Length: 211
Image (cartoon, rainbow, N blue to C red; front, side, top):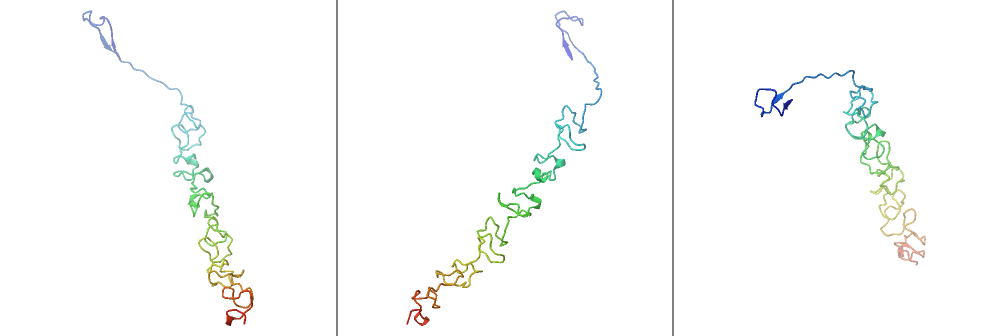
């Protein structure tokens, strides 16, 4: 410390002079005992925001367990400490929220709300390769060929799927029965779409017209 005085009483200078002088001091501080640290994490109880941390757990300056990925799950409990996750999977992520954690999910980008199997892939009840949420015909019999919408193929477009169609090559526009065959109202063996007299029994030689 350095002091100034407003009078001259410390040396032989003239009275108008103001003296200045320095002073040194030496002190010792004693601490009796160590601050209480109940959980032995190196942070005194009075500063510890998480006083019950298990022994050996890495903590932050305020005494709380570290959480590197900031997912709210302490590293010592987090099975995926470097990637933000959820408590349901002990800190591991489930990016598409389908209930299957990413490390076990074979279809990690499933749209939200879609039902999945245990591997995380969309359900496909009829196993036709088209997931149910996109399948317009989700109950197609096993082994039946389907189109891009998951419906049975109907090659001739008569409204009867090929696997049920007894006449799969019916000309376009021809009226068919439930078996997919052209109708023959007069039962003369000539399908209506070729029969000039579809309501009167005829013969093929006259294009189904009566003699």
